[in-house]
Image: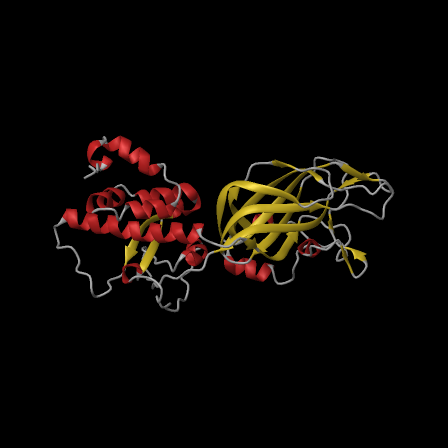
Length: 343
């Protein structure tokens, strides 16, 4: 009979921890936690699911700890039993972060742009509106479809485009931008930028932004109305009439549902006025939305409860959202009443 060895019993603690922390698939880590009681305790006691979730999505680092409402079927640890209380905390965090990391890494990628919010400048509105960048066709009703900035003598003047994503919580993996080729001008110039950078975040105030964004798209810069929690590296843009794909180094969790595209540097002058312009034909944002399934309530105290990640935006702004209960039909009872509390 073949002898089986559990390396958890033979290797040093630091070595086992290093091996398990090298796993980047949440399914592998969850499988490891159910191999035996020993493995289960090791994974939970060292918060490996939480560490993996924060490593993949550092934007969740604002969550300080999790709370779990009483389900009526679980017995709480006896008062004074610190070990039992600590174990309950580890178990609860394991369930929450295992659920989150699975939900955020298993989605079908699709275009996540819901609408155009603002452009830092527009040359001829509405003919050259940012709204045109939502249409993948180069021509609409026999007219060229693109957004154009105002002309500048200084080629270093940047431009920004802001878009609303399809949900307040999205995982974004890739952003594509297509410069516009002016086929109706002599030499058919392409008005690209030198480089591009991306930011994601949420409004400074949901109440204020709701009033400000009644008439869209805005024709003035709106960057000061948002808090950008993520900023990408700078990507070089080719002066080519093609949909150029910029893959983010890691999937980004956008909490708030807004994307800014920063167009840096101008490369093309318009012959008729000798000014530099940037023109964009189309924008695509690839990723997936997150649908919360958790059921929770909220309180008026400091420990504010969170219904899935969709409520992160409201909590960040100090708003107590009205929550309707959700049914848990597809999950085990252990996942009921899971809440997150922000720092």
